[in-house]
Image 1 (tube, protein in one colour):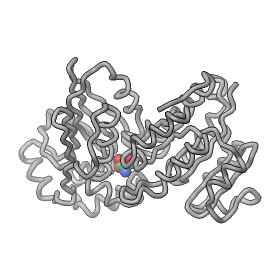
Image 2 (cartoon, protein in one colour):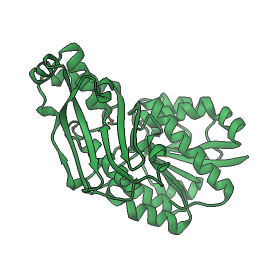
Image 3 (cartoon, protein in one colour):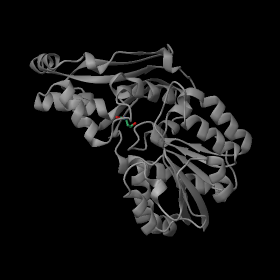
Length: 347
Ligand code: HSE
């Protein structure tokens, strides 16, 4: 049995779902994989709760049910400040799980947190995209030099194991990845088309789902999908930069455009495309014929068509969602644990 001490940094929708998931499925993971996951620390924007021996299932459920940004109220285990070095000195985690929102300008806090974790000798599982989008080589280089793993399956199509699919294509020459990589905007377009509501009303309802970014402009303006293209390009060894992804905002799509496309037997989709031959990438609204697979992908589902020298592959799965994404993160934690047993790491 391998004991894995985990800190959860960021405690929003995915973090809370993960705490519940570990409470409910911890026994199953122990039985099936011989991995004993102990959450030794939980951090939100205002405070930290930690327990050297790890929180038990009931404590995890209580933490997950606190009001947002209230981890500091979890007495007697909490403090009302955030100091990751102090947390690391106290609980010495094996795995750092980064779940804070992405800021693509400063990278704060997730990039700094991930670098700190690696410097302090912890493996990293991140659902936060910014560290990889802004500093993929630095993060992976630091991990390699320390013999540590960085897993990030939840950064693209977070509710599905899509990153694993791409990683399983090392021997293919992928020339293009095209599809729907943002759940919030696909949900908005689906609502506009199915219920003929205006963009603003659809956005309001999308935000209630808890799938939108903390700053939903990142979804609407295509930055989130562009960030995912950047991560995909890095996985495939042909990196593009975020600033070089051409973007057209979804806010340019009006209800009248949706109605016109319906009349012409088409649908509007917010399409992300990475052309690996040309090194070009774009995120833009596009009309798609009704009989195209992409047209069938509705709500918070995502889809990617991967074109390669061997042939085309289509993957459809949940783009986000707290519980679905928490499953993807948990899989990464188990994978890291398996590497710990084997006694190695890197990348
Ligand atoms: N805001 C993102 C989306 C969450 O809507 O797809 C998952 O990355």
